[in-house]
Image (cartoon, rainbow, N blue to C red; front, side, top):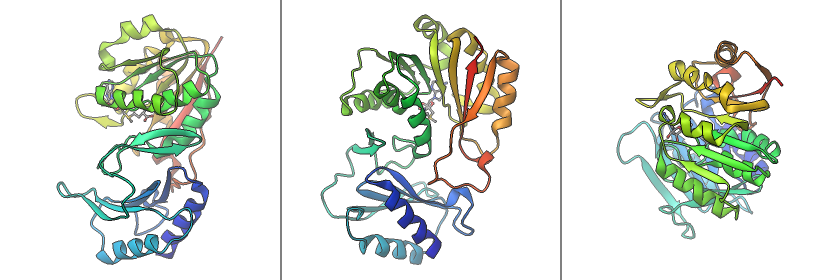
Length: 307
Ligand SMILES: C[S@@+](CC[C@H](N)C(=O)[O-])C[C@H]1O[C@@H](n2cnc3c(N)ncnc32)[C@H](O)[C@@H]1O
């Protein structure tokens, strides 16, 4: 238990008011706590349980957060029982200033994003992609950017904040794209050069090609979404289209969060489908997501098309 408290204290300190994972048991660096993660969506702390845990553990965490003092003291404490189908969210305390039913604006690296603290899955921002967003912000100046599988357009917000000339966001979820539009407004970023295309990717190549070519392409699909995208089969279909979508010298950020498919999978696909692209680097993994095997964690790989 002390290891959990130590991680929470370290990450609260590092948070400086930003969203942060306080404890990441899923990375298997804390034996016995593989099914526990704790997120800070200031001012809300959310304990996410992927398997049943003792009441004792929940009580100890509850007390720990109640007795915190100073700027990092949370205002609300929520426990999600992700392994249950129903009644999975338990608001244990809320001192009243935050409406947990409404979108909550949270900060990361100077930008804001709306999240839904009570949502069981996909609360609006993937916290482990922080370094990817940082990279995009620093590498978008003046570029035409394509953001595939855009979800709530966090990459687009980072790109526009970093001076992108145009951004095309594509996602089959129009609801997520609508949150994406709000995320730009939340940061007072202009949207006149930002497009939000609500289609299945596999039906929209023509439109994407007309809006291109792109100097930066971001590809961040789900690992498995039944009927929509299965990485082991479908990633290849996307990469086959890359050469015609990308400018000479253009960059591509390939993302994959699947424990079964490592970097080798993406490197091999690129060799097969995009032989004129060279591998540059893997974007740093955030330190609040320690993982015993980095190949099972989120992979974010950068490639560049030869000139
Ligand atoms: C991992 S999330 C993307 C996260 C996002 N890039 C971010 O930075 O927050 C995966 C997204 O892919 C979308 N998606 C899945 N299959 C799709 C398809 N065939 N065409 C378009 N979008 C798809 C889902 O709607 C979901 O929003």
